[in-house]
Length: 282
Image (tube, rainbow, N blue to C red):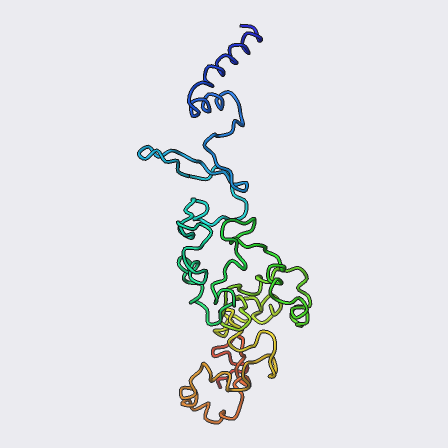
């Protein structure tokens, strides 16, 4: 069979099958050629969804994503379950008030923090997150500083001495965007990015230091007390440690007027009880 005749036969087969159903025609064409578009595919903003017909109802249903997704996509949007968020009678309207809608599924974000970020507290998640899909992780509109600077004034941020060397570093590398135990929502170990010598050569660490919870003792940005402490002297230590238990020990009876850090390192050390100068046995 010569080349011209082969092409003629192939074209004849394609013409014959083009009169078949859309599904059969697609199967034949895709067998011979690469890149034939799936007639049962829906493309929404570069995301391709497979549409298959339910054998019982005959209704076309979205089953799975065919193309890899860049960034992130909200599961209800991905599965085309629009009415999990939207009102069925008025699709431009949310199913619940915005303050409740996101927390209907994401119910842990508002309750797990002692101090909550403003948009989280008011249920305004869409201030930072796209409700459908994003080129960034966690559906964020942006992963850079400009997301935070939509609300936070750049002059106020730059004026803080702790921000003078952050350059283009993302705010969320130090701050939890949802909330935290302190006013500035610092992440665990955020302080150690600069203060990395605090734990050096200290096999025994003070509990808050080990947990990365520097905010238990220190303000994150400003304080009228030295070392950014939240309280001065032994008052700070007695906020966690029981005065009754401490002063019941004989060796603490004469220490009531002294600061605890005269004998104990507040961060860590090599000795039990974080003693700076442990007593020597004779």
